[in-house]
Amino acid sequence: MKKDTIVQFVGFITTLEFDDFMAKWEFFAKRFMKNNVKTTILEQSAPKTRFKYISQHQWPQEDFQPAFMEKKRSESFPEHTVKLVQFGGYTPLQVQSGKATEKGLIKVMAFISQNENDIEFYSKLEGFRHLNIYQAYYESCTYGYVMEYFAEEQQAAELVQQLKARHGNEVAAYKDCPVPVIAS
Image (tube, rainbow, N blue to C red; front, side, top):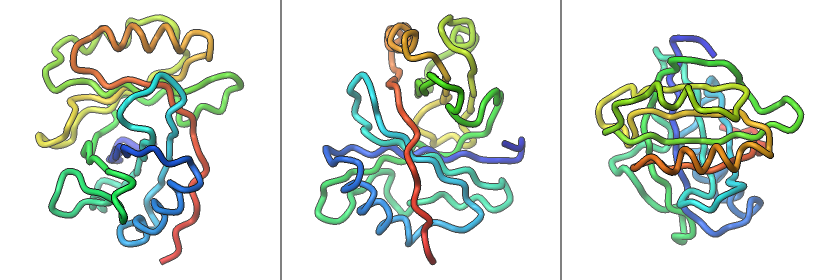
């Protein structure tokens, strides 16, 4: 990931299983996605949190046009089975890994409150192999920072508990999911 990249995070509140969710996501994404945007879909694995799915959209900074953005910070997919919540755009401060490709690694996503003052705390935790840190690109972002940890499955549960102990954080383990090619 280049330094002149902006990563947009979008959370999805739903009870839909992956195939049903992706059918609705693809229909909705066709209106907003461009070919030069790298997209990752994450599905919650544990523990349960508000956001069953998270999408990450990597934009070149000069082309940044937030995916899914219209006038509202949150809205619903057709038939109201999926509610999406815009977290905003974030710039990478530290990138140690691009994917959980190493055998046995899973992602632990921590969305850190705007009120957090001790960011060093998050890099000093134990139980992870890699850490990507993203900082809010503009003031209206939902969270101040996004921490993307890559941890071994056995250590991920303990890492989640440490992160959840900090007030104001949204934390869960996620797995990467296949993203369909969006035809224009």
